[in-house]
Structures are given as structure tokens and as C-alpha cells.
Image 1 (cartoon, rainbow, N blue to C red):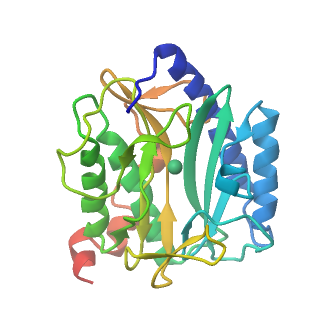
Image 2 (cartoon, rainbow, N blue to C red):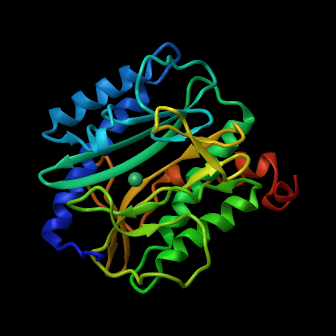
Image 3 (tube, rainbow, N blue to C red):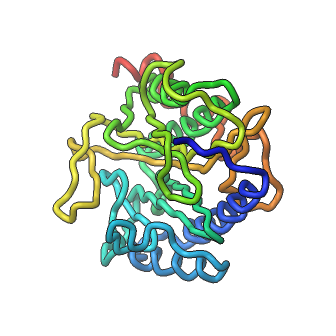
Length: 281
Ligand code: MG
């Protein structure tokens, strides 16, 4: 069943989203060569608890970290540990908080030091794909419109979208109905209604969409060892469109995509290769 949240419940989810977003902002600032993934997770734990929340992933089906930390070919669900970040690593932080009974979930990809041109382009495309996905959210749209928009955009650059893992509804449970795939045909599945809240999270691979799970039974990696990027926001359906709930500032941004999710006009994306050329390359 897909639940629609009341105005009061959405206010609580907004607060939860703010706790998560503020923590993530600080974590991104601490990323540099020499920092371990456990350092980042410990900091996340402290930041979330300081604001009265609980790390959403800690203990989830036995998960050992406060956040998921995934590096390079690791797509999602990396367990924080002794791995030390190195210059040029592509580092994904997936973070969630439970605040006053309500969950929020978000993720970002950052480069440790200077990214390669390849890594930069993958990050930009994935971040923009999240922006395009969020722009699909409005009452009357279908859930699959989101995935269709992501897949079309991402594959236009010659990249692939992960199929084994999908976004999800979110609320008093971390994972609620409906599933939100990053692929598929438009006009299918549930119809969006005001009050629905979705965690939208494109996972984009430089090579194959196929994945493997490591022996730790958590870490999901690309089957071909190529890079992967991941961005996520918790997004509410509003009467006239969408509202992103995982934002660090207190003023809600209705129907507005944060600057970071917009491709720089004629910037790094177009400078490297146009979409059409990339698809054949
Ligand atoms: Mg999620």
C-alpha cells in the first residue's frame, strides 16, 4: 500500500530530511585523502544523534555502519571500515536518519581530491539524472515516468542504470511502496498523488548495468569493475509538483531543483562529448 502523508507528517519528514542533509553537508567537507570510511561513518553517527535522530541504516538487517560508504566500482551498501580514501577515488555516501518516527534518505557522490575527466563526467550525468527524475514528480504522473526519464538521459551518454536496485517510498518505514526503478517504459505503475514521498536514487555505471555482491553480503559492485555514481533525495509529491525534503536549509524549495542538480550550461558535459556521440562510443 502506498501511503499519503498529511501536512503534519510532511513537516516531520522535512525535519528528518534536514537532519540528514545537514549531516551529509559536513561529511562531504571532511572527505580528503587519508580519511577512512569508518571516520566518515563515526562522524555521521555523531552529527545525526546531536540533532536528536538515529542513523537509519545502523542495525538495518544487521548492517554495521551508521551510513553506507562505497568507493569507485562499489555502487551502494559499502560497509564503513578501515579503507582509507585516496586521491582520485569516487566516494559515495548514502545516509539516512530516523527523527521523531520519520525516515529520510539521501546520497551523494564526491571525488577525493581531483577527479579524472571520466569520473567527473559520470558524476555530472548522474547528478543531472537525479534532477531530471525529480522534475517528473507531480500528481497524475506515473512512477515509471521517473525511471524512463533517468534511463533515457543516462543511456544517451553511453552509461547504464543499475536495475538490481531501485528507489522506494519512504515514511515511517525506510522502505515503503512503491518501488522506484531507474529504468522502464513511461506511463506504467502507480499514479503519483499529493502526500506520497519517494526516495529517488539513480545509480549509474560507466560500463555494464550488471552488478555483483561481495562476500561481505552487503557491498554491491559493478560486474565489470568500472566506476559507478549515486545521488539520492527524499521527495514529496505536492498538489502542484514536488518538494525536496532532504535539503540543509530550512526554507522548503517547492518545484525548484537545487543548482547542484542542474548540468552546467554547456559545461563539462557538453565539453567532453555530446549525448549522441557518447552513445556510440
Ligand atoms: Mg534509498
